[in-house]
Amino acid sequence: MLSIEDFVTRIGELISIEVPPSWTPYDELYNGWGLDSLQAFSLIVVIEAISDTVVPPEEIPELYTPADAYDYYCDLVSAAAASQ
Amino acid sequence: MRILVSTFGSGGDLFPLVPVMNDLVGQGVEVRCVVSRTLGLYTRSCGFYTYALGDASELRGLRDDNLYCTRFDGWLSTRRTLVNHIGPTLASDVQQIDGLLKEWRPDLLIASGYAVAARIACLRLGLNVMCATIFAQHFSMARAVRSFARPFLRQVEDSAGPRLLDSAGMARLAWGLQVPTVLMHDCALMGNQAPEGAEVVGYPYWDSVPANKDDAEHLQDWFDSSSEAPVLVTLGSFLGLRQHKVWHEIANTVDRLGIRAAFVGVDKRWAMDAFSDRPNLCCVGFVPLSPFFRQAAAIIHHGGLGTTIGTLGSGTPAVVLPQAFDQPFNARLVEAAGVGRDALGGDLPSCIADVLGDRAYRERSEVLATQLVDPTVAANRVAAQAIAIAEQ
Image 1 (cartoon, rainbow over the protein chains, first blue to last red):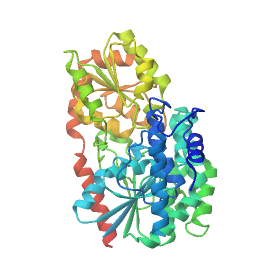
Image 2 (image 1 turned 30 degrees about the vertical axis):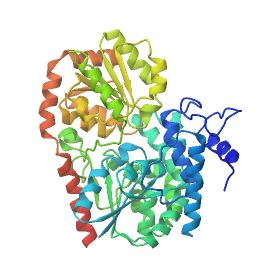
Image 3 (image 1 turned 90 degrees about the horizontal axis):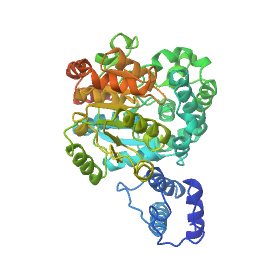
Image 4 (image 1 turned 90 degrees about the vertical axis):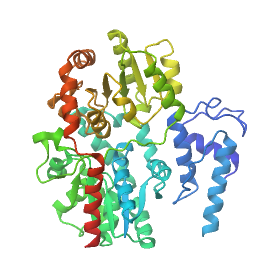
């Protein structure tokens, strides 16, 4: 499982956002980091991809901060490990 | 009975299959989807069990500005989609679907035009496949496939294995035209352009996309704020988010014509900044369009088949500004039917002025609206055929 620092770096690369150098886990992704609509849904898709989730949860998560995004990633990785 | 549905591409590739899946579920069929991760966001929010395909590399396609062009009548964008975005992951996608099919074996696969990986995986396992395509023009291209998108055909042959099908069969596999194939389009619009041998079932229009309620309310309030009906502008579910240059062109045109316009499916944050000084514009994210089509004086759209049929069904005339793929083809159909203008062949301001100024466009649109196949009938036709094949 990635650390939150590595996770944020990876997500930044994959959805093409410039992560502020002094980011914190509770920054606002939309008003703070400036995610646009396309990047917002890309974020969910990319988190599910890097956690190797084949059957993602039916409910689409609402992610407002890097901490929300990392929590979702950790949940998916744990669920994948439990199912093996 | 179990039916697996697979599609790849944008919302326009998925949306007509949603009413088909709903119809199947209503008839007691167990339905699952295997789709790109991005399209999976829609199928999941509609409550369908979804396998997410691949590593989200399809997102590169959404950011690839070279993908969206009308060169060679839109064929270049189709070629780039196949060669640059579907072909490279084909082998791994086939392998992933192969694994899923061993766990959950369907009686039938329904595959859209671009869902070639699922078609290959099912054929290799000897499972029934039915193609449901929205691309009328692909029927003619299947014959020329050896000279078009050749690298893609090689990728299909490599993934399928050389002995699975003969050369013509491989071409049909690549284009999603295996027998049986249903064409989800409408003869009332196509007239004599309907491809030979295609079973045209009508278009299962679906417009219940999960959307921001505030946007829909804001848009309705804006419509209600004036007695003058505005034009409604949409460039599709995904494409619209990236087409900043086109939105600017349309904004400048409606300014010049002195009319009001609602921009739907635009990136709001960008639009609020770009158009903050334009009181004649209302910009919202993606909302279901059906409630607004009838309230508009005209629709300006990109010519995606879903939006084209949705507009026609409302009896509202259109100006079609194609951006890629099958959109130039659909734009010509709209113009030929006399229910709108194809702005690829004329300049945008005069196309809009024509449609707004000539009542005959609306009259012909209202007539055509009564001739289209009802969307629920179209969905039922696809579902009925699928069940019949699965029962064989």
